[in-house]
Length: 147
Image 1: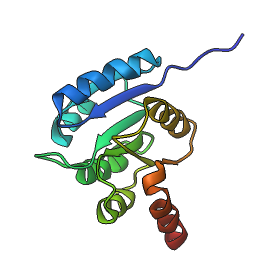
Image 2: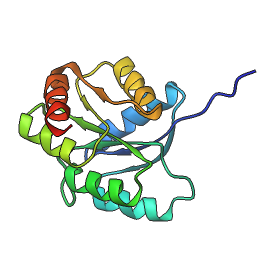
Image 3: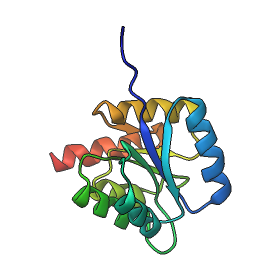
């Protein structure tokens, strides 16, 4: 008999409707939403009060108050065990590279199929990296240059 581990997720995005629908989608796949937040500052405040940390943060790149780049850096410094999946409609090379430099573990475009998001979360949870086809080459080049 195998034990199924429920992946705990935090969703950080400034669009209320998107967050709500994405939470429903994640729960339908069997994920547990630990919390949702509209920006990095709110997310970090919620993390300080969490009894249970998320396994993966889905993190929007462009948000007011505290953007995804700043938030990712802080999370990786304070909570290095948490995986971060960059989440954006933007496949602009400079944003993707800045997110990579902040320590993210993956990057998925908001136009992705829900099954791609599900797969990405499993890959990150299991210690891998995941990048949407639209940004995969940039990520591969970044890791070749860094290592």
